[in-house]
Amino acid sequence: MKDLVRLRTPIKESVELALNQQIQMEMVSSSKYLAMAGWCDRNGFDYSAGFFYKQSEEERGHAMKLFHYLCDQGATAISPEVPAVAQEFDTLRSVFEGALEQEIAVTDSINRIISVCRRENDFATEELMKWYVKEQMEEEYIARRCLDLFDQIPADQIFELDKQLSKVTYDGNVFE
Image (tube, rainbow, N blue to C red):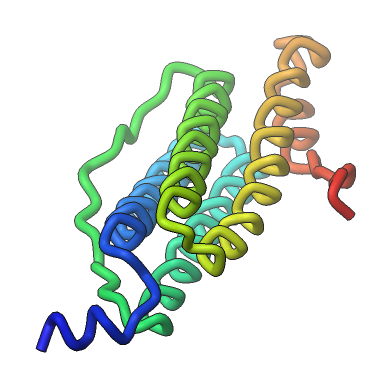
């Protein structure tokens, strides 16, 4: 039966594997952002906490988009195990540095999936992944801009910095 199902889906096993790995990565990102939100909440950074709660939900949405895509294509979507993530951070800046590192890793993973799609001539999945490329441009920009604010707002104004960090957006999508 598995062979018959495999014949009915345009998704090759290598693409399915890569997408399931990305689903796990997105869920891990969601968990990391939730931990960051909790740390910010515990340390009185209400605006940053709200920012990271939103990021956590967004990452889960990214995972679900891929999960539904695999299911819709007749492939196997796997509910991933999510390992424990760090709950403590040294400073607010280290939280945002961790966010940028996570986004860079996600971008690298998205690029790898597109390479797999091209190798397998999977144009439909590559088309889906273009949305993620645009999303990652936004995510990395916001994370970098937030880190820039740490150098622009004096350390003794940490709660003003907290407020300003939550307002950073990306409105320069070069593809539109």
